[in-house]
Amino acid sequence: MERFLSKKIHNAILSLPSIEKAAVEIFICNSDELYGLVNIIVEYEPKGFLNRIRRTSNNVMDAKTMEITRIELSEIFIDHPEVVENFEIKIESF
Image 1 (cartoon, rainbow, N blue to C red):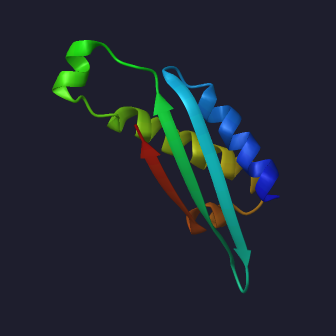
Image 2 (image 1 turned 180 degrees about the horizontal axis):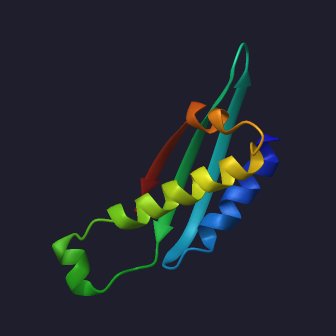
Image 3 (image 1 turned 135 degrees about the vertical axis):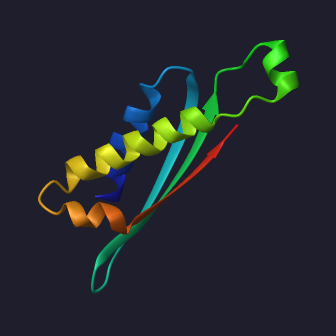
């Protein structure tokens, strides 16, 4: 399940504009309650010279990545939407 979910999220993230590369790792634990950790590393397309000098943040793209990840999780756990809240999503971008 981890592999399937990881691939699904990876493909969804790569469909966003200006994303060059992405890596997704998912760890799911099913003790008393299902919960998990989603680690995402995203590399954005190179920006122009002035944007690099001004250090424009990628907060908007990080928010879109987070949203798309939550959508993919909710599609997998459609019968149990409360499970999506048990997933911690971490995004590292550069």
